[in-house]
Image 1 (cartoon, rainbow, N blue to C red):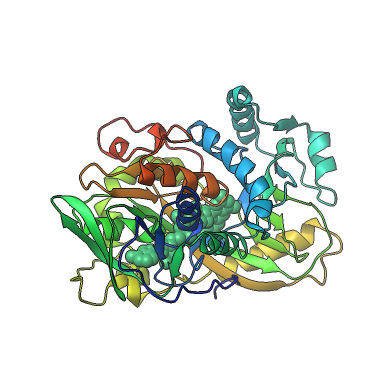
Image 2 (cartoon, protein in one colour):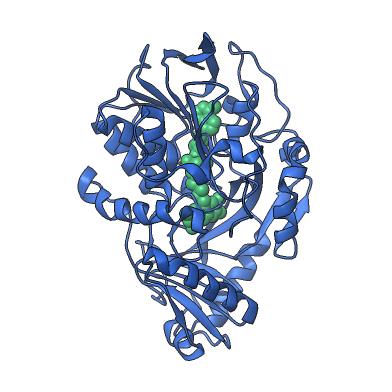
Amino acid sequence: MSPPVNAVPNSPELPESADAVVIGGGIIGVAAAYYLAKKGHSVALVEKGRVAGEQSSRNWGWCRQQNRDERELPLIIRSLELWGGLHEEIGADLGFRRKGLIYVTRDPAELAGWEAWLNMARQYQVHSRMLSAEEAQARTPGTDGGWIGGIESPTDGRGEPSMAAPALAGGALKLGVSIHQECAARGLETQGGRVSAVVTEKGTIRTSRVLCAGGAWSSMFCRRHGIDLPQAGVRSTVFATTEAPEVTPGGLSTPEFTLRRRLDGGYTVAIRNRGVLEITPQGLRYARNFWPMFRKQRTDGVSIRVGRSFLEGPEAVARWALDQVSPFERTRILDPAPEPGVVVEGMAALKKAYNGFETVKPARSWAGWIDFMPDAIPTISPIAKLPGLVLAAGFSGHGFGIGPAAGRLAADLVAGDAPFVDPHPFRYERLFDGTMGPVGPM
Ligand SMILES: Cc1cc2nc3c(=O)[nH]c(=O)nc-3n(C[C@H](O)[C@H](O)[C@H](O)COP(=O)(O)OP(=O)(O)OC[C@H]3O[C@@H](n4cnc5c(N)ncnc54)[C@H](O)[C@@H]3O)c2cc1C
């Protein structure tokens, strides 16, 4: 079952040409289209399903600096600034509220990790602070978890995934971006080794600049053009509760559950580090690239299985000609099955933790296919092998919060402007030239 997501109107006609074409209507693609249009470029955005149909509506809605890899800190700091101003700028609510995030634990190693992170992050003037056992207890009224401490960031926020990308898409439409849903990009045409057009199922758009922001489908899209992109997916389950008493205004992460207060008075709930890694042809192809991540994560809650994704979806084997139906059209919206156990376990943990949750129920559950890079850091980069193509994918489970700034950075790279944040950590080449850093936190 898909989570609810606000509708975005389609533009009437596919343009014959555009200064730039954005492939993918997730938070990254719509933000990039919005900022490209703000720069004065004509932009077409093509989306195989609907805006925010995939990861961008299925996530927890955390917009956090806290516990984020240092390589992403400059980008998330700028992103939180953008989140704060976008409501007024585009005249629509993205659901963003700066209500703070709290993590609590009873594991000394975890607490030490958060302290080490805070020592590193102080140079970026983040507002996080460590919590003593008593403070952790006081910040989580109702729970009796035996916390030894925690970390909180009062200036981090939460957004509404059902609203954010659609609202940004609305802002992009007002600036003249043409948006085409149920319009898959099947591939690119080239001239003299450069991008010259995007071929979609509804026609061809001539352009010399393309952003591929196709989320989990980016590796498959790139492979068709001889571009290798090591990308892997993890299926992760989330559920929404019915309306419930306020136990935190923002986000709270405990070992048993994570929750985020929604604007409608319910919570979006999940279990941290819980997911299913499905064995797929693409996964086998890039197994070596992901070995360091696998070693780091495997003692946590990720289980491994073979499922339908071996034969269909973004990591299956696929070949298609540009005048044939492509795999992107066959799966308009990637809607993986949720794990019922996560809902049962998460709901039981909530009821155990909080008085007043006796009548609260899971209203809906869903899963999302989180697309990872081998170092858990996104790729936001021009592709030297195919001039005119920029890639923004692999946001590794934390691309929603960083979305506005990542889209803005991608727009700078597509336009050939000076990037507003140093793009070096996100360069494509690191994945192959031996300069990739350690696996970041997920
Ligand atoms: C369960 C879960 C929890 C998460 N929690 C958080 C969180 O709390 N905070 C956070 O910051 N991040 C979180 N994330 C991660 C975040 O949701 C993603 O990193 C972010 O949404 C990625 O955005 P995107 O635009 O790259 O991809 P997507 O939102 O997946 O969008 C890509 C789009 O491209 C389209 N597309 C693909 N190929 C084509 C094609 N050929 N033609 C046309 N369209 C195409 C797809 O249909 C899709 O709509 C979570 C993710 C999940 C799944």
